[in-house]
Image (tube, rainbow, N blue to C red; front, side):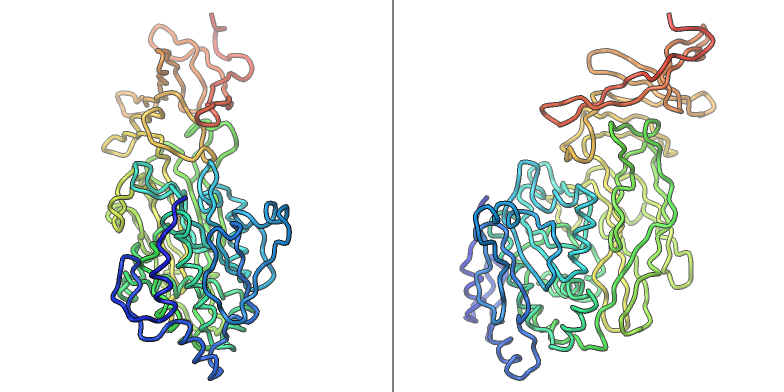
Length: 498
């Protein structure tokens, strides 16, 4: 993993006035450290007393500034560092903690590991509301190299930095500074309510150099999957944290999918294990994977459980952050817009509007609540289509073809390899009659709309012998699992198979 430049961060820490450079750090007449020290002396800043820093890469990319009062999570032995102090944090520590790990494995960076496993997303939410926040480099999971954005969802539960080793340093420093900048009574209430890290995330996303105001906060520009270190504005974050009052604490968005149409495995899509389109549901993120062949998804989502700890009235805001806003429909179901119906059509691979060199297969709907003073951190409803498919739809939205052999890379934890191409068939009256499966070595199989395999047809083409099938995974050295069709039980029909 490569190292990023440390000099601009040192300049910012010391408060030396220089013009903006490649790191994006602006000229400062007073350093963040001096700002915090001044406020602490006046009793208006909490500092980092009671906060912990958790380095999870053996010091490879550690916080390189001294923050008064900050303690460090200790891993006393090599074995403890290896077992409990390395890589993705999967525990919720019982105190205010921010940390990082500039590590990655053969199956991606820590952010992708978390986002590809629904149980880890639940843990990430509990960390987020348990006063824990971690930063991880994307490390080849979000690059302009053909693979593009490999992360299947987007969350406010962590910060993922663009780059590899050392790219996380600007962000851990920014989080530490923001935690120090809160008024003591505000920070105490944020910690007690579990709103500390959601508030830090709102401040971070609102304060970046590339965000010019509240209007841009309600856009995909402020909420990418991965953030650039050059955009971090330390001083603006500290000032924003210091400016929050106890009776104006930002609200918390809460989401729940209350109704949706889910395709059926074995009929509308094919996997070897029980993989639903309903990938993960947490209180701030509803994540779905586009598996079934149907062109559009419908979901009714409620944000009615969103809250403000000062009981301020809330307004609700639903925004297309990523995807085609002309094709996506957001339909309010009540006057307050706390419940909406989403209509999401299939989105193939495309460039991201705010990052034109990066390609994505994901739709992100951002959900925000506002209490009259502050917006919440974002909630997300995401739909991820699989890049290893090439789909063709008819003009009326009916599926025409899915080629599972012509696509791009997808994390093997999300789907199996399918070595075939399915061509969908319709009668002269446009009635769906099933599909033909073409194998690369020349074999053809026929299937009915309910997923049964056709073994024999009569002289005019009607199926007379069919069999129920299941899909099993076989080891695949290149991809993990390769899908195979296996018949279940005996054929059924008017005649036995020849």
